Amino acid sequence: MNPLVNAISAALTSLCMQLLRHFGLFQKRRILAPNETFGDIATPGVVPKNDDPKRWDALVAKLRSLGFFDFVPPDRLEEVMSYCRTNHRLFDDEEGRSLFADAEDLSEGGIVDWLTHEAAPQLKRRGVSIPRLTQSRDDLKYVVRVGSREYPVHTSEDSALDMWTNGGTVTLKIVNDLLSASAHPDRLYWIHGAEDGLVAFLTPEMFETITFARLLGSNSWPYAAK
Image 1 (cartoon, helix red, strand yellow):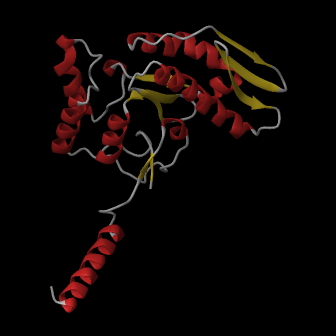
Image 2 (cartoon, helix red, strand yellow; image 1 turned 90 degrees about the horizontal axis):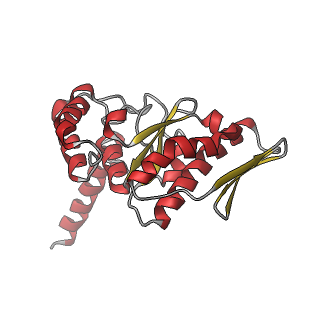
Image 3 (cartoon, helix red, strand yellow; image 1 turned 180 degrees about the vertical axis):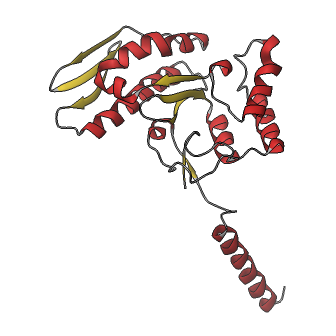
């Protein structure tokens, strides 16, 4: 091909890519690892909620093919999927994947209680058992032990914000270590919130599908970095 034509083609391609990025139509994004999702990467409002019915139909159908609704009783599957499409929500008690998790409670000594009463039933459904749990917490440090493994949560030198963050990230790490050791494909992601936070069991592909669909507002979606 003529060198001039090559040069013009390359210039036009570069210009098109710049325009797409400028108008937000082509953004390079990095999908976060589960333990990173505790951070509020996308400021609420950055991505507005989108109620486009066709796009919601497509998202729900895609998630069904990925096994998102596998824990829904067969006789309620269509009802739950219809609820997601109509109410533009994915994370509710009905889908069998999400749990409430308060970062303040976790950081103030609530990790073992949350693992025992909230996470354990969900893990059991996935064939994953939790080893013996113990913890120690005083004015100097907070440590959780899962079987023979020790998870430091925070020390007296951490700020209040660091304590909250550590409580959330350590809880995710404990659950995800158990899932990984059992070779289960799900991982626990922090969806939104700090107090009254929400976590959900998703495969990485589900997480990516939901994030890139850009239908849930950025105060209620699995976060991905821009």
